[in-house]
Length: 106
Image (cartoon, rainbow, N blue to C red; front, side, top):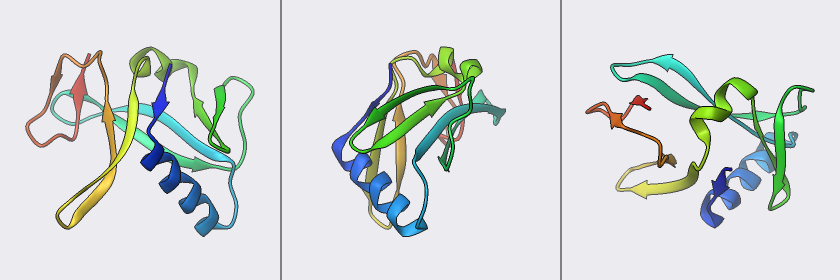
């Protein structure tokens, strides 16, 4: 369902270690921006009973059921471009993305 690249996985593991706690990440979408939806990535300490969860590279990836339809096939990568760096989402289901890259539409 969701793929995390090796470089993104290493960054997630490093960030969990830096936090000093946590078991993984939660991926989701929220309504915002010009195109309607934005990706959300947050670190988690527990998995909720309704969550869809799987383990990868020593951490858990969690998706809430509402967001799962939007995230099928997503690849999470970690990219550095000049002075900027961060997680990047490649979603084969995206139809459109706003000019600033903040939001997308399916």
